[in-house]
Image (cartoon, rainbow, N blue to C red; front, side, top):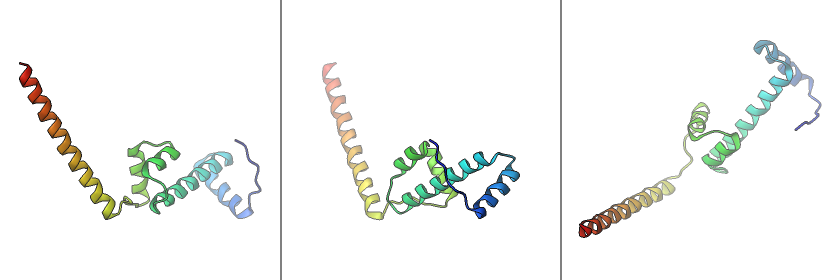
Length: 114
């Protein structure tokens, strides 16, 4: 996609300084700055609970490990509240109980077949 914009002189100075320091052309630096801004925006959206960690990864084309590293760099902790966390624990426990009962039932069936 191509967009034409007027860059204010103060931003142009920052762009030129960064391009000089990183030995890159201004277009590459502008692309980096745009990506960093989008990343910052999405991390803020995650920290406010407006998007999930999965959606954050999807929008930034990152796997869960990269997302966790990104959130660490921004010093963002998980956005689960205590109630949601406790519900998740209950769900996991009930699934584990169900799985163990199914395994036991399947073992009984197999034993009867022998």
